[in-house]
Image (cartoon, rainbow, N blue to C red; front, side, top):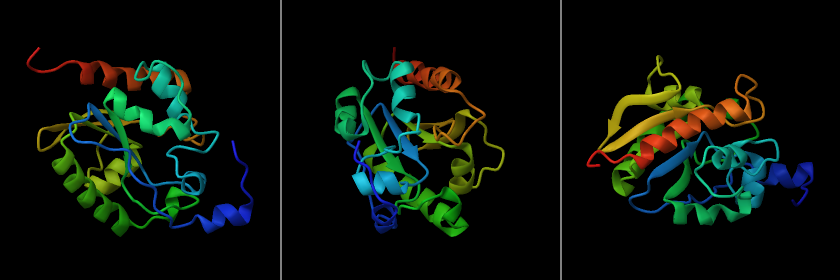
Amino acid sequence: MTRFSAAELEAARDRLVPDVIADGLHVLFCGINPGLMTAATGHHFARPGNRFWPVLHLSGFTPRLLRPEEQGELLSYGLGITNVVARATARADELTAAEYTEGGRLLTAKVTRTRPRWLAVVGVTAYRAAFGDRTARVGPQERLIGDTRVWVLPNPSGLNAHWTAATMAEEFGRLREAAEHRPED
């Protein structure tokens, strides 16, 4: 992985990272916002300590461990990535309540337009802030966006010590099983 200086990472602040998205995905994963490493590389969940890619594989969503620079391959598995807030910051606590609210509105419009089967928000705090649901917990939500079901997953950041890679993979696996089951089956 390319090493970036502090100045190079800081230069990535506020940069936008393109979504990995297509119409009709099985699952659209939604991060909080891009970190500086993600913005510097242009690849989602690029920080080395982030457990998104290992957990995605451990849970059975991908047949092998993908690297962030292989994010485009997700589309072939019916998966995609977006964010609640588009601008890159060093920490999620740099985002304002207004940014989360606007991000929730924009995310709703994006989901309505692209119609994934499931929207999976990685981070219960981000979900609560974006959708004004203070009681949300990890797991499936009652909220629908059009026909899209919503699942809240644990934040895969290395800073989230409440969840191990193994326990996160179990929760991601529950979503994978739900996403594989079609109501008409």
